[in-house]
Image 1 (spheres, rainbow, N blue to C red):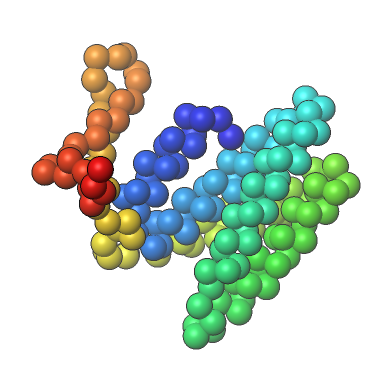
Image 2 (image 1 turned 180 degrees about the vertical axis):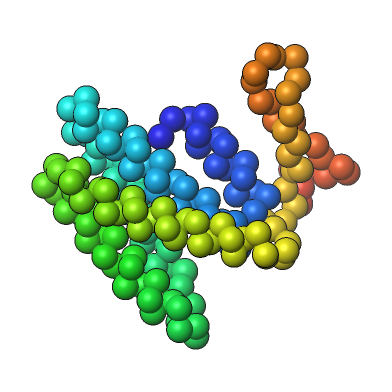
Length: 159
């Protein structure tokens, strides 16, 4: 994943609530798979494995964040274990065949959690962050972000 995408995801995380963070994590997994496929097509094994390793880390984080007081967590865990196994097989065998299955499952989970996040009106998880405003300013077709701090010069940190 390139640095522009990373900055975009980072900015979104600072403004996201719990369900939106899950959506972002699914999007990151899909972006990593896309980059891994591109690397595979170019014969770049190092990037291919690195991108899949990153996707693997996000699947592990999703597994670790499940709350088993809810029945759906058990079902999600079995899906995450399956995704995890397939990603590992793709890394170790240097084979992208199973990525179609991984991508399909993550895409369906993403669609479901997008619907959930639309209904979730809870506050952002991160507090004391800069407010980001995005808009077209002075550059044709370019989206620029501006951070706005309202009386938050140190955001809780003292120097």
